[in-house]
Amino acid sequence: MPSASHNYPSQQAGLPDDVTDPLLWRLGFDVAHAHRLDASGRCGNLGCPDESGPCPALRQAERAMHLARQDDRPGESRIASPDHASSDDVRLPQRLPGTGMRAA
Image (cartoon, rainbow, N blue to C red; front, side, top):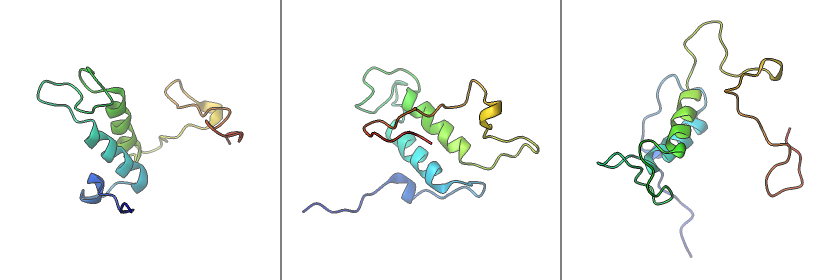
């Protein structure tokens, strides 16, 4: 029977002091680690064949790591309210994929 334990790179990484969402930061770290660029500047992950430069997964992982950290700009919020959503905000689907449940 296979072991239930996993060895994720984020388990050995030190959590920065300003991280407010450790789970999001660690997930982003693990994805970024899996999609590191090789010596030729291409994504080294087998799921991203022939991706030059940072692949979409790496860019999203870096964004997640950034969003998981405390915002140092006073008076500004990283999370926009639905009434003040910008074009950069991620929209949730109306239905959760693979389920009959509606997204909140």
